Amino acid sequence: MEKNKRTGVIGIIITIIILTTLVIVTNLEAGAFSGAENVFTRIVMPIQNGITSLRNRMERKYSIF
Image (cartoon, rainbow, N blue to C red):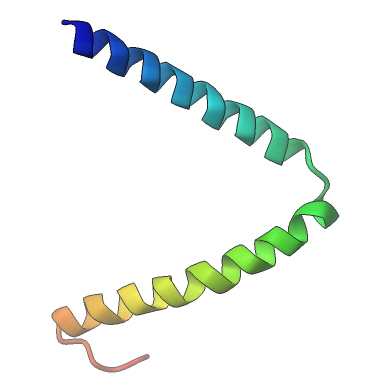
């Protein structure tokens, strides 16, 4: 029972941190966030393309278009 209480408290703390981060990020100006957005896009897009390519290979859809 003690372990479940700790897990619940940890979940609440993580939720509060995530919500606080979201509020801070949404209140930033677009110019301040554009540099981080470019870095994020450069990291995520190749991963997304690779996952899509793997999914297509598994489904035997070899054509790009």
